[in-house]
Structure formats: structure tokens, C-alpha cells
Image (cartoon, rainbow, N blue to C red):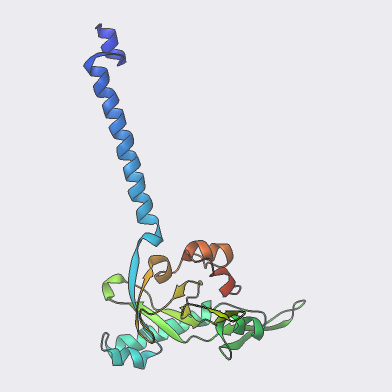
Length: 211
């Protein structure tokens, strides 16, 4: 084999090794890309959370200090006041969150004058451990849906960005949810965006226009 052959990688052991090296780089790159995608795909990761209706229930649970429970409850209520989903009518709000689950919140200026409605916060969640660094988030009720004589199961709660949350047991305070549900998106996810954020096809139809 000529030195030119070896230089061009067209023959001999030198060319074979070069091809092996290229193949290895390509495979390694593909593997790294797959790992990268797994890391940024929220549906591939889960978070353990605690759900409480109020600070008193949190204190009674003896997982957090009384001071932490009250602070987290206040934070969740502040978030609810600022980010609760907004509806143009009480009927629309109650259709998504249940009878008597909504309250008036401000008005719309002309030419579309009218009162706006938001669901009441009924619970909030925090991380199971402080190491998770999850900010307290409010939870809103969901209304049951009935098609004919068949009731369709609904999650117990939804977040401000529309993701479903259901305790692992009826009336329980523990749940395991995807990262996309536990951590708010940079932008609130409503409509099609909400579906992609939550990985939940029903999230779009269960949320209003956003706070």
C-alpha cells in the first residue's frame, strides 16, 4: 500500500482505524444527545410532594415546622391571588372547578364589560423534602365530568398552569407527579401549550385564560 493510500485513509489498517473512530464518535454523539433529551424531558422525571388544605393540616402532619407551614401557606395564597386561571363567567368557571368553587375577581373594561371569575384555592403543595427546593404552589378543585350515564375520572386538583394532581390515596396528602407538574413553567401553560407542558391532553379544556 502506498503512503498516499494511508494518508487518504483509503486502504490498510490506518483507514480502518479512522473509520472506527468516526463511527465511535457518531455513536457517542447520538448517545449523548439521547441522554441530553432525557434530562430535559420533564415526563421522564418525578417529584414527591405533600398536599395540605391549610397551614393547620401541615402542622398536624408533623413533617414541617409550624413556622414553615404558615410561611408556605401564605406563599401559596399569594401565588393563587396572582396566577389563578380567569374565566369570563361564573358558569364557565364552575363547569371546570365545581359548584360554588369560584368567586368574582375584578371586571373587564369596555367594550367587553363584565365580571371575571377565578376558582378558590382549596389546597397547596410543597416538596416532600426541603432538598427538592420546590416553591409552594396553590391547587384548585376540578369538577367531575359526566357523559350520558358514565362519569369520567378527573384529577383531584389542578395547578395554576393546568397540570393535574391527585393524591396516591383518597384524602391523602402524598402524591408523586412529573417535574412539569411540580415546577411552574417559565410561561403559564394554557391551551395547546398547557397540554405539552403537562403531558395531559385534558389540561387545555380545564383551564381559563390565565392570571
